Length: 114
Image (cartoon, rainbow, N blue to C red):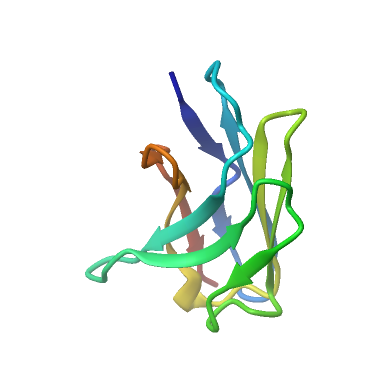
C-alpha cells in the first residue's frame, strides 16, 4: 500500500520561500521516480519537477527552473520541494506523485500574495 501525504503549503509573500514535504507512509519500496505537479485555478495540471529513484537526476519546468529544488531522503521515505523567490503565478495546489503505480497525494495549497 502507498500513501503519499504532503505538507508545508501556506500563504507567503512574493519573493518568499516554502518547503513542501511528501511522506510515503506505505510499506512498499520508496525507490521509484517521484515528481511534483501543481494545478492553479482554472488551469490544467502541470508537471513542476521530477527526480530519479536515487536522486541523481532531476528535471524542472522552465517556469520554476533556478527557483525550485526537488530532493529526496529515501531513508525517511520523503520527497521535498524547496521553493524560493515565489511569484503570484506559483499559486496552486501542489501534489506529489509516484510514477510507478500512479499514486497521488491529497495536495497542499500554496498561495503567493501580498
